[in-house]
Length: 61
Image (tube, rainbow, N blue to C red):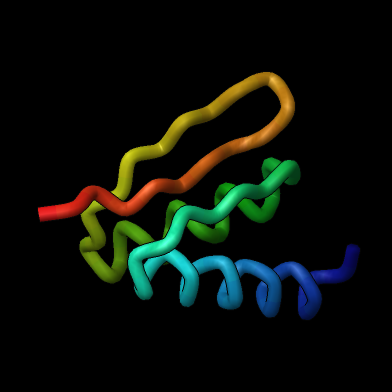
């Protein structure tokens, strides 16, 4: 997977999260990109890391 595609996929997953939906990624590279953006945007997200991937679950108010 090249950098451009990784960034595009990460942005698509981030849009799901911002809209209140969970997102799942198998790639450590994608998880790292998403975590970085979550911190920049100061989003309240629960991260469930497993051996096979990472779930990003928005916390509800």
